[in-house]
Length: 596
Image (tube, rainbow, N blue to C red; front, top):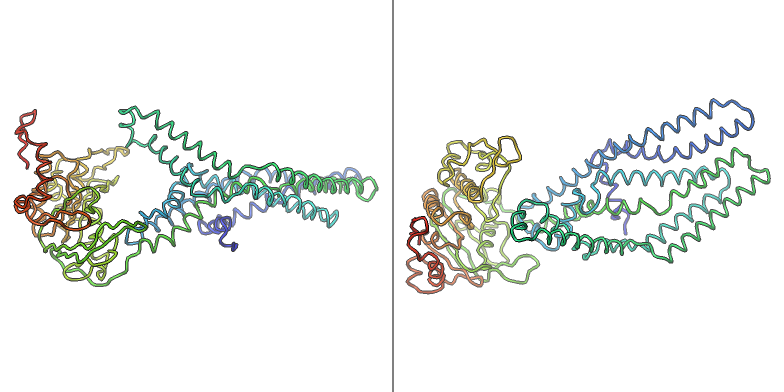
C-alpha cells in the first residue's frame, strides 16, 4: 500500500487542513514532551555525578526542576490543544461530508447501497457510537505518540553507551508491532459484517432515544424490546471487534521471549561495564533509565487509537470522490421558458443504481402545459420515482423527458429547478420561523401570507414564530399542520414563477373533508400552472383534468375521472373499493362524508 493511502497517513494529513497553526503547535508540544523524559534521565545522571564528585549542584538541580515542571505543565496544555484540534478536525470532516452530500445535483449518491456503510461511519463518528469522539481521539493519539517519541529519544541517548544496545532494544520492541498487529488481524475490524453490526446497533439506539418512536414503543410495549435489541446488537459488535483485535497466544509468547532476551542482554552489558569500572554511577543511572524508556515504542495504545481515529477520515475521503459521479448529472445550458411547463415522457425506462428491477419500461405520457394530472397506482408502481425524475434528481436509463420540446438533460439544472415546486411525502421541516419555512429563499410577505391562506394555514402562528419547541417562543405543529406549511411553500414558489408543481401525497396527513377543501384551493392557486398529483385518495384525484394509472412501469389507463369510470377498468375498481369505506352518509358527529 502506498504510504499516502494508509489510514494513519490520511489521518495525520487532515490535521493541518483543519488548522495549520494549531497542528504545528500540536506537533511541537508532542516532540518536546517526548524528549523530556530522556532529558530528565540525563539531568538525574548529572546530579548523581555531581553528588559523587562533590561538584556544584545548581546546574543539575535547575535542569531537573525545569524538566519536571515542563512535564507537568505541558501535559494539560497539550491536552487542551488536542481537544481543540480534534474539534476542528471533526468540523473539517463534517464540512467535507456536507459538501460531498450536497454538491452533486442528483441524489443517487445518497441512495446508493454501496456507499451506505461509509456514509454511516462518516456521519456518526463524532457521536461516540462508532468510537470515541474526534477530540478524544486526537488527545489519545498525542499521548501515544509522546510515548513513541520518548522511546526514540531514549534510544538516541543510549547510543552514548554502545551502538548495538539501542539497536537491539529498538528491534525487539518494534517486533511487537509486527507480531501483535498481525495477531490482531486489523483488517477484520472493517469488514462488511462489522460495519453491518455497527449500523444495526446504531439503528436500535436511535429507536430507543429519539422522540419519533417514543409513543409507539410505549404503546405497543416495545420499550424492553428496543433495549434488548440494542444491547444484543452492541454485544455482537463488541464480539466481532474483540475477535478481530484479540491478542493470540503464540505471538504473545514470541513477543515476550524477544523483549526479555533483548533487555537481558543490554542490562547484563550495563551491569558488567559498571562492575568492571568502565561505566560510572552517573552514566549507569542515565543509561539504565533510557534503556527502560525504549520500551515506550512497543505495540500499545497508538495502534488502537489510530484505528478508530483514521476510520472516519478514510470514510469521508472515500466518499467525496465516490459521491460526485454517483450524484452527477450531465450539465446542460439551455434556459427554461417562463409560464406553464409542457412535459412529454418518450419511451422512458429507469432503474435505480445497482438495482436490476426496472421501475419504468417504455413509459409514454404527455402532459400539456397548464393542465393538471393525477398519477395513481399500486405501491411500487413508480409514482414517487416519476416525481424524482421530473425534478431531475436522476436521469432516465433510456428514453427522454422533454420539457417544452427540449430534452431535460439539455437544460440548465439549477435554472430548471427554479421553475419547479414540489411537496414530497418526506417534506422538509425546518427549525426556523414560519416565514423561512414557507419561503426559504425569501419572498414578499404578501406572497407568503397568500400562500398560507391558499394552504389553509393562515392561523398557525405569526410569520416570525420559530417552528420548534426547543427555542424560546417556539412552537411545534401537528403532522397535518406541517403538511399545510409544506403546501404553502410550494404555492409560494408558484407565486415566484414556478411553472410545474409536483405534489406527492400532499394531503396524506389531513382528514378527508379538510383534504378536499384544501385541494380545491390548491387547484385554484395553481390554475394555469402544470400540476402533477400523486395520491391514493380518489376524493382528491377526481378533481384534476386527467388521471394516469401506472402499472408495471407503463401507463395502462389515461383520461378524466368520468372517462375512466365509464371505462370500467383498473381505475374504476380502485375507486369503488375506496368508496365503500365512505358509504355512510354522515359520521358520528353528523358531518357529511360527501367527498367522493
